[in-house]
Every structure is written in C-alpha cells, then in structure tokens.
Length: 165
Image 1 (cartoon, one colour):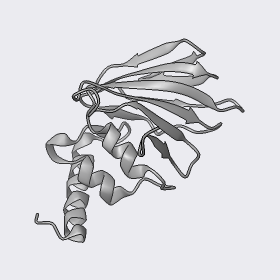
Image 2: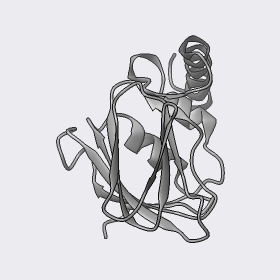
Image 3: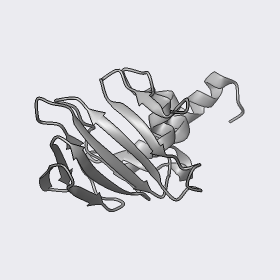
Image 4: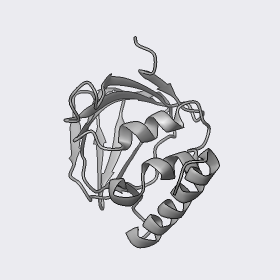
C-alpha cells in the first residue's frame, strides 16, 4: 500500500485510506478503521459531510442524536450533516468498519494530522479546521465558542510556523 495510506493512532486505532479526496476529485473520502475494544470518539458533528458507517467485522455501537444502534457485519448507519453522532466498540474484540464521508471535506486532513500521535495535535487540528473550512465540532458545546477557539489556535499555529496571519 502507498505511503500515507495507513494511519496509526496512539490510542490503538488503525485507519486505512481506501479512497482519498484526491483519488475522487473531492467527491468522497473512504477509509477502513480497526477500532480496539472500549474506543470511540466523543459525540461530534460535521457541518457539510454525510457519513456512512458499514461494519465489516465485529459489532459497532452508533449513536445518532438520541438514537442508539448496534450494528453487525454488513449493517450500516448513515449520518446526515449537522447530526450529532458517535460510535464505540463496547465488545472485547476489535471491530472493523468502513466510513464513507461525502464530500471529502477536512476529515481526511484531520486524521492525517493525528497520525502517530497519542492525542490530537490541537494547533495542527485548528490550522486545518478553522474559518470557513471548519466542519468538525464537538456536539456538547455551542458552535460559536468552538469557532472562536479554533480561529485563535489557528493564529497561534501560523505564528509557530512563521507564516503571516
């Protein structure tokens, strides 16, 4: 597989890029995740992207708004833009699933920035996900303070790298 196609996170998740935004002219970002037991992101939302999760192996719990679904192999859940959601592996075995994000958006860049890190590198994340490109937000905090923090951190990131504000 080409360099940069397999992303590894310090928390144990492994993401394999199946089709990048560059591969699809920005139409979609498709990747497979191997999620260890007890793992999953905090509840979040995407302003512009639609996500579809399809389980390949194991069981995945997906929460869409207040609804909770447990998916097995071959089953999928679709998440429209702006819907708060999360997923987790509540079993003792890894779960493998494919995510399709349409259009490609900033998610791919965010995952690539986190590659090899135990925690999300906040300045790098803010530099990607700020201003009019901002699309990924935590579900439990209003958008306006998150935007303000992301924009401020992005300015710090530019200062750190010596680029002009």
